[in-house]
Length: 271
Image (cartoon, rainbow, N blue to C red; front, side, top):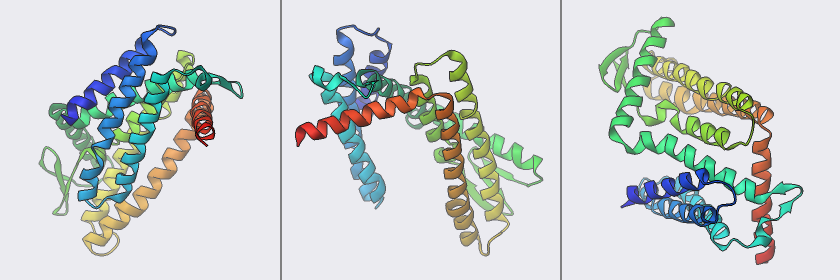
């Protein structure tokens, strides 16, 4: 049931993105897609609650509320909500967000929810991690399609090790921008391939640090390498990549401003 709701939501959001501007069904389909997307996120919080992952509990509830809000705005189609604020069209911003959600969602959930695609991307990243490690002189032993080891210490490559979340996010946002193809291509090449390459380097670093006990015992080495150094490095890299993308595609800033202004207007009206 959950998967059916997810694919229905992504399908509707994709259709709304494709329908030409001005078509009478564009708003209704987009609104329905956001509502179903809200249902999907609303069904996720219990899973994270059972894992005691309260940050993701909060984020899934927040995502459900935001999606429901977008769905309400599209379905209501109140002209007062779609006026230009500070020269920014909220209509354009919301449809850009719709396209970003559709493309980003498809880019991620195809690999997370379809077993064959999940196996393919994890296998590919495992292969390329071993290849890159050999270039750096790191000896990695392959134990299974997704299981590797350094110095006898095993590491399982999971979906989170593929960087598909960040790749999907940047892909969706970039594709949503109404900009010339040349700038879209530039934004893509300074983000997606760079994220993928840096993630492979991250994998090699973490596995070698863990297997060779760089920071003490294996558990401490893994924690420092994975949770501290790699996490901080990833955040810095994503910040710099996002900065570069926004410089190339300022249309994305306009989209964010439009959505923020819309939400601010709704809150003021509610007050």
